[in-house]
Structure formats: C-alpha cells, structure tokens
Length: 196
Picture: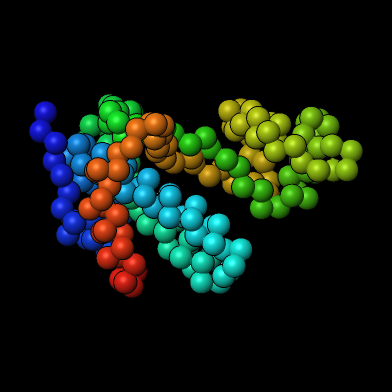
C-alpha cells in the first residue's frame, strides 16, 4: 500500500475554493491527511470557543469559518469513500484515528402542527405522542409518523426529510500524531488569510 500525501497546495485548494458537491479525493489513503486536518480544526474551534468569553463577535466569525471548513472536509471524505470504495464503511488509520460512514436517520418536519394534531386525534394516536401540556414527544411522533408512512397514510402538516449520510471521526487518544500535523497546521495558518 502506497500512502498518497496531499501537498500544501492541494490542502489550500480543498479549503480555499468552491468545490463540486460530490468532490472526492484521488485515494482513500488521502483521507488520513484530511483526518489530521479535521483534528487541527477541531482543536482550533475549541481554542476559539474558550477565547469567545473575551471577544465574542470576532471569535464567532472565526468559529463559523472553521466549522464550515470542517463540514467541507467531512463532505470530501464522505464522497471519497462513496466514490473510491463504496462498500467500505470504515477507514482506520493507525496512530491517527478512524472514519466511519453511516446513514443518518430520516426525520419528520412538522409544517402545520394544528392539522397534524387534529389528524392524530381522529386516528387515536394523539395520546401516544402528546403530553398533557400538548407538547409533542418527538421520538413517539417519529415512530407514529413512520407507522403511518408504512401504511401509506398521508399525515397533513408534515413532510418526510430523507436522512443523508455522514461520517464520524474518532481520534486515537494518547497518540501524538504531532509529527504528521506540522505541515497541515501551516496550511490552516496560510488559509486564515484567504477569503472564502
């Protein structure tokens, strides 16, 4: 196995420009470098959240920028895994961490609560999902709406939003990985001056 290393210029391209929604890396082995960059971004976000107590507005903008970069990198990792190795759901990188691809659960968006509640009352399901204060129990509502959808019954006031896929990142504790993050951190520092 040859480990393909992204250059600093490739990292700048990855974070400093608009990418197609389905952008993927050239190799699943490049995901290790993205994983290291995600860890650096996560550490910077934590630092800025601590600093936020002192300088709220400028730190909020910096945290938002870093979170957008992190989301972009996670999207690249997801599309790389789907494109280059679609049957694999986990990539392990010793001394760095692991990336796991998983499907998010579907969720229901309640657009018209009153019409939905009226329907649930007529169907006899309202008592299962509504508490005395008429606060909706989201977990029970999801199950009830899923049951209606399975029976091909349309519930007024709600729309099903398909769950997409996401990746979860797990870092190995106690492993430094610092020797690998040096050039990656300098890429982030260079990108701080770029307008996204």
